[in-house]
Structure formats: structure tokens, C-alpha cells
Length: 367
Image 1: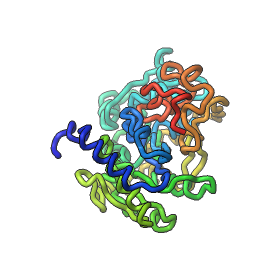
Image 2 (image 1 turned 90 degrees about the vertical axis):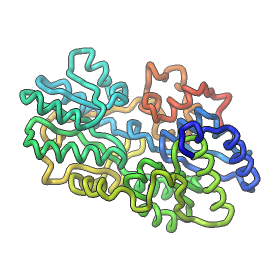
Image 3 (image 1 turned 120 degrees about the vertical axis):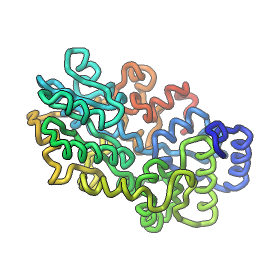
Image 4 (image 1 turned 30 degrees about the vertical axis):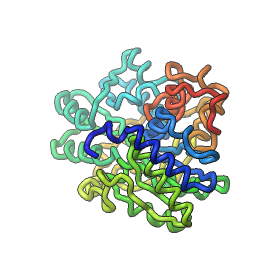
């Protein structure tokens, strides 16, 4: 197939669903890790068309959603300072912090700007040497290479007014943490294709072997997901637990080694707090010592932060797949995309936003 609409062909989708129904003999439970995959599953109603009893568990693969509250509060404290330009991708601006969000802060006069790439922030710093330019660097392994290249470029330019507030997270430790939970119901994973396009899938092979769970690297279109689910079910039915690649048009086992080299040069692995989930060891990236001068958390002393999560928001349970958005008492009433209580209702990859956009209600829950 060559064109995008071919990956949305309803005839082929029905064939894959028919084959899935013929193959599955048990009510398997499969987690799609990526929030982009969640949105496709829910928007297209794929999760409601699966064989009886089979369930998709929505995972913690929304980078905006898992960015810790303390990082957001720190970003807003930095942005509130005179002479600072805080730059970010647009989907971070409406994520609620303890007291406000970046969009509201901008409305009150803070210089908060949306950029489309971290290199935009580097250019801004070069153009305005009298201002401190901070880039809010969040995301999984997918965005880490571009952020690493921005730091390397800033170093080559000798910039002293550019820094990053880094909150990168890594997928494999999150998968391991989920599987170590005694209440975990996940029997197979659909791994995020864009993460694996960077990192390959060698990191997933020990997880599949240790926990006896199939892992299928999967794309984001409806046919990608249906084929990925079918490949996972075939493994489950056969008693196999391997890493397979559905996303062959974009992913190789070794990934993108140049991108990996850039990430290893600029960052090092560290413990990281995940919003709603808690601290996970070796689950994040921070700037390496030789690039610490670009670390906004060290450059700006914002004093003691006391982040306070909204008591009504069940984002943690939603991010781990323990609950559905429709299980939340505030869903669609006190928590909406215009007035979110938590990040999953804001982000374009958030599970709550996916359910709300699809018109899912508690009476239509797939639980």
C-alpha cells in the first residue's frame, strides 16, 4: 500500500475483524501503549468491534499526560520571571498545574510562545540575546533526538541564554512497572511505532521473554491497529511471547542509530516521576553533566514548589489502564476539554479527550 486512505479501507478492516473473530478463543486483554493509537481505536470504534470479551487497555503513552505536576509548576514559575521567554509545543499550554496553566499565565502577561520544533527556540535565543529562552522539553523517546540536536546546536553557537526544562520519559520501564503490578491484567502489548522508529525493539525483547507477553510494534492507522491486534492474538493463542513488527514500513529492529547516538550524547538515564503514577526508577532522561549549563531547572531557582493534584481527578488510574474515563464521576461534567481537571482531558493523545471527542458516555463504557 502507498497511500494513507489505503490504511483506512473498510473492506480490509472487516476482513481483519473477521479473521480476528475466527482466531480468538479467549477474552484476551491487550494494552496499546501509545495515546495516538488510543485515539484511533476510539475514534474509529475499533475497541467496540472486537470479539466478545476482548478488551483494549489504554496505556500511559501520552507524554503530555505523564509530565509531572511539579514540572508544570516549575515551568510556570520560570515563565513568570521578567526577561524570560518560555517556549513549548501547543498541547502543553492548557494542561492544568496546581493553580493555573500556561495559557492563562500568558493571558496575564507572561511571554509564553508556541513553537513547532525545539530548534525554533534555539533560533529565538540567538535572535534575542538579551532574553532567557526556555524550552519545555517533554515526551518519550520520539522527541528526545530533536531535543538533543537543539542542545548540540545551541552549544555550537555558544548560546548562554538558552535552556531546557527536561521531562523526558522512557517506555520500557513503564511497561515493566505495569507488569510488576500484581493486579495487572495486560496479556499483550501494542508497542508505539514512532518510539520504535527511533529506538528499534531490542529493548522489548527481554520484557517479552521475562514476562511471557507478546509485544507487537504497531502503527497508528486503523488497519495497522487491527493487524497488530491480530498478530498479538495469534501469539497468545499459540502460547508464544515474542516481539513482532507490524509497522514494517517505518521500523527496523535496530531503530535509528544516529538518533540514538545524539540522545546518548546529550542525555543520561535517570529516575523520573510520572504524573498520576509516581516515581519509576531509570524511566527518564536528564541532561548529561557536560550539558548541564542548558538545564533550566538548575539555571532558575524557583524556590520550594508544593504541587497539589486535583483530588477528584483519577488520571493515574486511567493512565495505567485500571479505569476508563467513563468511570470518573467528573468526566464530561466538571471535567471537559474546555475546563479540564487533569491532563488526559487536554492532550491530543489523552484517553479522556479521545472518549469525549467520540461521544462516549458511562452507559456506553467498554468496561
